[in-house]
Image: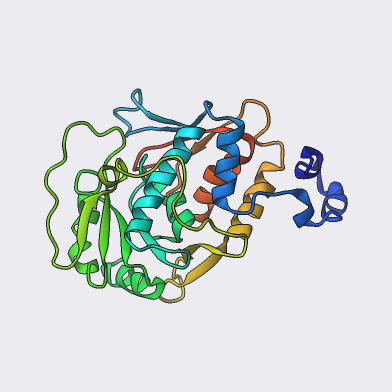
Length: 287
């Protein structure tokens, strides 16, 4: 498929009829968010994909991923989840402020199963209900170093979980304190488990366009939050529509501050830049 079809000429609303005359399936879009990342790693392996700021005080010491490095980390994380029993239709809940480990964890959850990001500011009762509705038995959560208030909610949320994969702060130094035990729940740092996993490939079944990629919860303004399902084709198409404008042309660098339980954060600031190999600077946990 030619780049001409992948990237139509859009100068304004008058071009929409011409653009929409070409069926979306003829444009050669990646078939999943995983294949979108793999494409970026193939085209720009050594280019910086992400620059993640630890916090406002340590912004001069960010953690960086190249596109190839990000893909390798996603493989490792997805293989951890696969080893824990996550399969194509298995939801993986994610509950953490933005940090370097959350970004590949989100993509890994979409690769191995279905990502179900949660807003940790919700009341424990709402979080418990969202976990129950999603069916997630694996939770990726900020650890006590990264978000102690969030970590304090874990005992209330642990019923029904098989495993909690703990995230550390961006560019954390030193060894973390031992993690607490909860009967019947495996609790471990995700990065520690990932070191033993294969980085060159995912050991499970890769997603197809119609497979579910994510459950995003609504704001719950008229009742308790509800879950909205996204397919891989849906997220890739939305990201392509952003990338097809001129916003990401040239040497554009994207600044990301919205939390990853936000659709905008995922589609606009994580997936869309992958289409054109653009660097994203991610703010710290407070945005």
